[in-house]
Length: 296
Image (cartoon, rainbow, N blue to C red; front, side, top):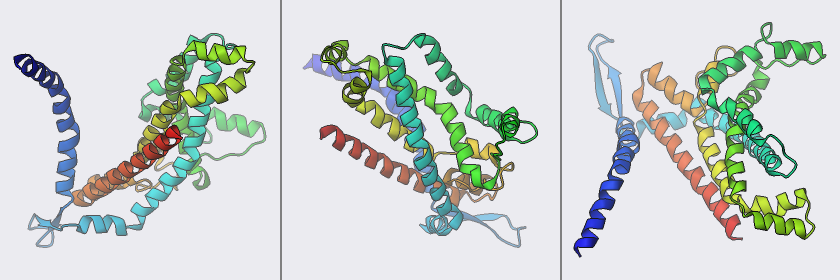
């Protein structure tokens, strides 16, 4: 009995830092945002009488949901997800399978080269690409023009594709590393048995390797969907250079604009809570679909 108590005490002591971080970095901020979302501040006395805090209940949520700019942000995210995830996941899988093939050489060099863009901070990456997108400054635009191609990365029509391109540059290499690590965990005996049975590299990749790293693919898609909902840095840097990328282009930018430009912390908190609920719902859907296909 005393041994069991001792084990429980040790487990509680070891788990305490995790629960402290979980409480401080997740539960408390979400709880405070939920509290803020129920109130609004209004000026009195023509702006000379200070502000008063009023309880509005679900008023801030209704305000955010009724704002066309907030709803349009989810449309942008939907287009971003549809354009970004297939290319990112498909490209990362192909590159990881090529690195894992028996024909690949200098694997360490290519792993490092592919991962390097992810080591660049997101804001720096966005600034680099803003330079590469700007006509008159960019060698990329100049090279395209020399080749007879005209492509304005900063036009309204290409706003989404320009943001997707920056995200791909940042994240494909990171996910290649994840997929490559999952491929390394596949027992070599299984791959060798497929080779002895006459399966080529392509057949082995499609029938053996991809099914065995399904969990890593589902996890990557899940994290990518959650990351897409948080899209902020890249469009914020392009804001001002591209007329289509306004200050409320994504839900995250809408919350930032409400808090720090309009000073409406209640609406900002409410829109953030709504965004978190959508992220939780999509996470649940992606996980269920992944588990269902895994069990099939």
